[in-house]
Image (cartoon, rainbow, N blue to C red; front, side, top):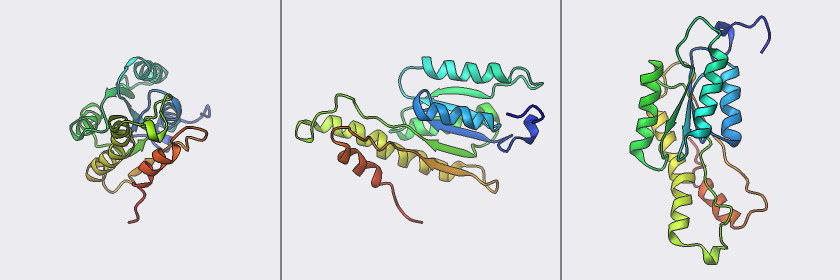
Length: 183
């Protein structure tokens, strides 16, 4: 960020972004970048809060130099494959930042590194991956379509991995392609 740039001149100042799967990997990098552009963040994680809490703490401590002492980032546990948790994710954003979210970046996804061959994949393993990678993307996009702030250029962004070199990558790719629809 340039030395003469103030928070009010940042392109996402006053905007709230929900980033699913933001505790690590590309979700974390996207959250950091959105914050550098002035967005307030909801850092979503599914199981372990430690990485999400560290990221929120780092972002809040960097913002502590400003006059406004309210947090710029919060960590929220939510399983994106359940409608109730997705609703909670958006509710927490509105409660914490007193405005509907403006941006959803969906980075949440699972692929077990020990993922078996297709012939050895259990129905439970397949359903878990499908529920997070496809149903979770649908649920968060649907909630965003109903709740993003209107008239201010809201955005929905979906991110997925190509899983190059991974076993059963065609199965995972098929799950994400189910979400590619046209308006």
